[in-house]
Image (cartoon, rainbow, N blue to C red; front, side, top):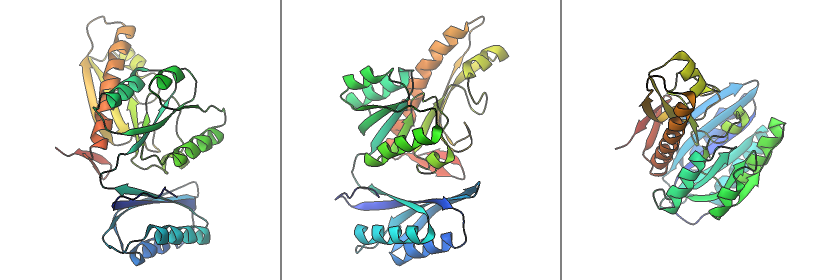
Length: 289
């Protein structure tokens, strides 16, 4: 369960994951209503026999008790054989952001420098890397770095999820994190994982996007910041930046310009999220101006 904090709670996010069976939705929604919660949004899915549901709940009752709510949720989870996670959104509190990386430093540097200069207001309790390549950069900013690598995806993700849970993470940023995330990972952080992809999606999804653009002879390339979903590179688009490809421009030149655009675009998307200017409806992002 999430750590207990003293600020006023505005919303509660309830995530339910486990083997599919009848009665889950009815039991959970009844529990929420009985605790004085109002369900503002709900998303659910079943994949390979695993049920997933997330609810965004507004709290109107002044008598709302976190202790009672958590105890009740734990009881329902045990009865249904489901894993139930609770996350609180609280007025005026800084969000906790985790950054996941592999080897490329451009987007990581942009995020950490923006935080130091006050361009984004956020706590960064940790950076997690599948290699130790960027440990020095992270250490220079006084942030703990965790090297988590394993050829077994389930083991690797279990270890990362434990670190995220311990740090009470609100937002995960994939700063050129070169690993595909499983549904079991993504479902635990719905619409709270931001990825940067080196193309103007939906064109050129997957790996080697700059190479694909170069080989296809496109005249305009770019990058896309989007929410990660179980469908690779198909999540709701937050922000995009484009640039014209010059005649006879080399692949290396395209990559260099693309990396600059990646840093700018990812930082913009993160800033919009931290400023609570992003809304999502029917899989489409709206920006509040």
